[in-house]
Length: 239
Image (cartoon, rainbow, N blue to C red; front, side, top):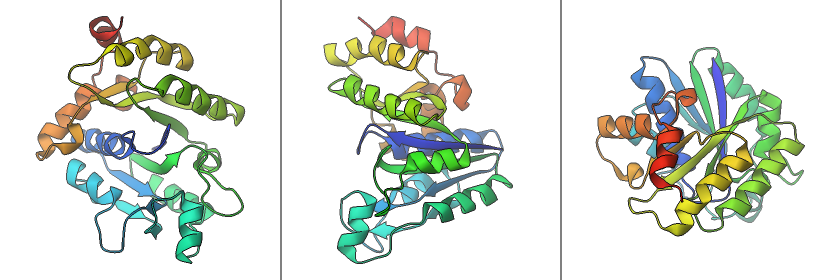
């Protein structure tokens, strides 16, 4: 069994697509996978959420959304504004442990960044990863301010004694510019290891599950079940 906590350098970096890619690769190997989303924010009751996207892309059926809050805010603030009790990360940890007994992989997808508050006591997905003794996969943007945001996230991980599973670029453009290409060496330097993956732009919009599984295989490295070659990727794209 294995547990991976997927976090990111912020919102909109591609965490859900990466979570779906991990699940799709596990399913393609004939093994069981589960995905847990402790807090879904910015979605009204009955609207599709991140776990629905995971199901659509990967085809897995074991998914859990533990709390839903309509405000597009960090989980603690969204719960407070909605007048709804916040998610219990202790309860989330208990569920993840139960799922790990019957699934080859359990993916926990965080909301926003590593240190987003889930309750008024300040519990974060970093605390959940520490409780579970799980590796943390960090999803980042391509280019822009990604280097500084990644550095802050990795520093927070190291400060808490958490184990980095790797860095994945959530969406690599078909035609990368100087900002994207120049960031590759810096990202690998910060992680002190090669990239763990780079999913191609538009992977999350694929409608065919087999096509998505192939995009997942191409975009995630061997330690995550795929065939992504960081050296070849770096040779093609870095400055």
